[in-house]
Figure (cartoon, helix red, strand yellow):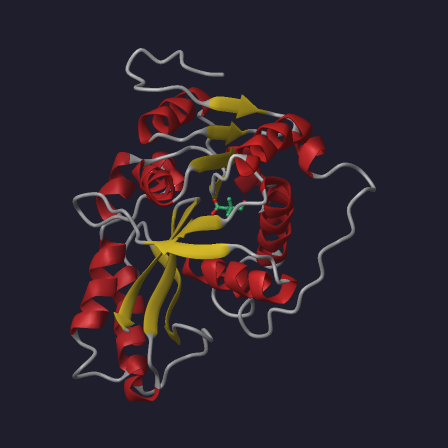
Length: 293
Ligand code: PAF
């Protein structure tokens, strides 16, 4: 049990082994408690705290996992540079009221030769945007989320809107595997200047940080002009706006909120989302804005 932060209002259990976690969670289930789950890769920020708080308010026992999943990184350098801040993370989780932190080693999540590979057909969902720019990324995400769900067996899973395409993939994975888990999307938490909270923000230089709010400004600009411009023109204008010195857009797409297919005419779609990824030096940031619901 952890409770070593002086400011922490409460305590939290830390498990590294599946058997210990399961023993605890089985007792909770037997006592009629509902389990909420927030999977993370650590380097936690206010966006994660919001996910934890939502889980705490909707379930009886909140489990957060911190596991930097090697199978979802398509660049070895990105995996190596991924920020790791365990002490700060523990403090944030204690403050947010998390009940259990699961922090397994790679060998615990992927025991050699013991797991069948997860082969799922996501149709078009894993093709565009992140799918194009990070080949194999979503196979790794689906694999680890399925594995963690098998371990934690939660009633409810909480994930952020910032990773919109990831959310769509996990939703489809749950439908395909028929796992009895309710998936809840939590709104993106932003800095006061609009920059979406992300673990990667820590790696921005002060110049890059000053430039980064342009991402959300551009998304808002596209939405503001959607009643007078075609999607194609909005995308072109957005890519131009994001092409400033020190920033390079990878994509700016306007897609159907369910299928992620490109939107040509707004009126033809019930939900529409603008999604973008940009590079600032070697830091890659993504963001999105729902244009129509
Ligand atoms: O969004 C993330 O942090 C990761 O992709 C996730 C869902 C924890 C899987 O490793």
